[in-house]
Amino acid sequence: MVKKLNTIPSSYLQEAEISVNLSNEGIRKLYETMLRDEALKDYTFPSKPSSDGYYHIYVADKTKKTGRRAVKAKTLNDLKNKVYEHEKGIHGRIKKTFRDAFELTQQEKMKLVKSGEKMISVQNTVKRNRSEYARYFGETSFEKKFVDEITKNDIESICYLNLTRYNLTPRAFMSMRSILRAVIKLSFNEYWINDNIYDRIDFNKYKDMLSKPAETAERVHSEENVERMLVFIHEHQRKYPKYLPSYALELQIAMGLRRGEVPPLMWKDIRDDLVTISREQLTVKKSEDNPKEYFQIVNHTKNHKNRVFPVTTGIKDILIRLKKSHELNGIESEYLFPAKSDNGVITNNTVYNFYRRMCNTLGIPIQKDLIKGTHSFRRNAITKVVNNTGGNVVLASQLFGNSPDVALKHYFTKADEEQARKALEA
Image 1 (tube, rainbow, N blue to C red):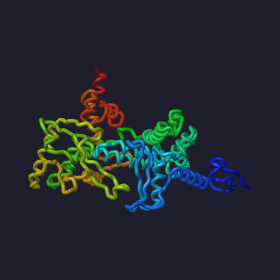
Image 2 (image 1 turned 135 degrees about the vertical axis):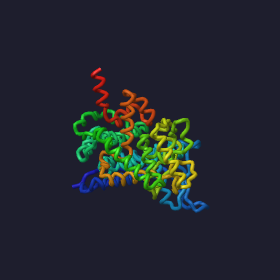
Image 3 (image 1 turned 90 degrees about the horizontal axis):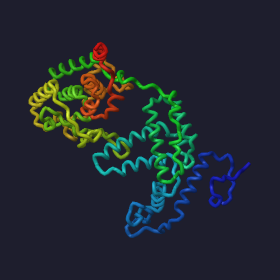
Image 4 (image 1 turned 30 degrees about the vertical axis):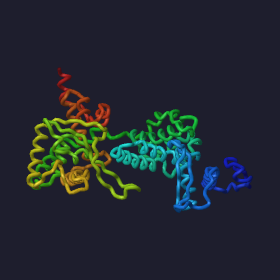
């Protein structure tokens, strides 16, 4: 038994009849071959290379003043592949699959960044986005659908699939949704689809399928354990006064710094009993373009806003001891934590590795599922500031570089019960 496939133009198949035994994947590959041929049929490709040994052709490009740009390749087949990739691009005529459109959202994200320093952060974001894409959409039939064929039911089905096979917290579910939103938005803006179907989904109906996230209070070390850590750090400093990472960790605990904000601190950042935080050291992860992880200092913080932190008595004591360590080492450096590294300072990993060894020695579980890394000290610090100022979340957000909403939602652990009791008694 045979039937005609109406989804493939009869002019392309020449009225050929195809067996119903042809798999869906086979049909899709046939359709993609048709799309490739259709995309290239309006081009007149050169029959031989130019004098420079390359095959040349022009493709349409709205971003150029001339409305076109040159493409060249060593072989005719490579030239056709490049033209086809152009046609699959954001300005090309090829229908886009969900996967194609996702990649284009990431390319657009990187294309619209001018600052080389900011590009590093964006590349890390893109790498994380691709990892999450692979988790939620990779190897599914959904990613192979053309965006103009995706229905409201398709989106609801992929949401249900991921909520069924994974225990997703509201934050993880939002990460998956952000990918869907970005792809549908780009598709709608570029006229690949006629309706923004993402806006038609009632995502609230999935609330009972979401896993309850760990309470913020569970994601910090107890005051008892923090005190044990400080005792360990001070003992370590007495035994190994030249070892700078122990001072770095102590300063991070005292100031609630992000991990990347510690290594690039300079002595000139400390003026008038204030520490200015204006740089961070980024971890550039391995990728196809970057075969080896490395660290780079950039002249901005995570939220691209400088901030100042008062030098308390405790912080002053740390800095005095750190200065003595420099003298013992014979160090004359502009950095608080210099090292023999590519950028002249200790790495983010160095401090974390010291923290990990300390926790193992003290028998304190790090619990990665609760994110009890060095970042947890920010929660301790923010909570103390909020409680000790009668709930001044704005001050805490200014000191630690978070918005008031984020500080309350993700960093504030609990109200001081003793202060609450006194207030009620009054």
